[in-house]
Image (tube, rainbow, N blue to C red; front, side, top):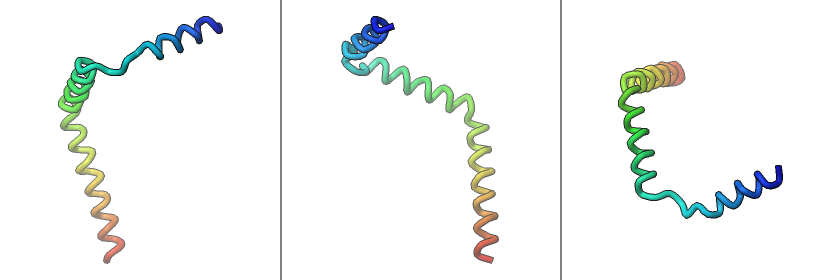
Length: 61
């Protein structure tokens, strides 16, 4: 078990950080997911903003 932990630590130390390609791929995946769920996200935000507006009306009425 110690050898596994040492191997993971050695691998982690060898990593120089994220390269440009990895960052571009992550951004592309996030954009694709956002486009796939765009309608759901817009509906959710509109519903939340509507609830917030209703609550604000109750407070200031």
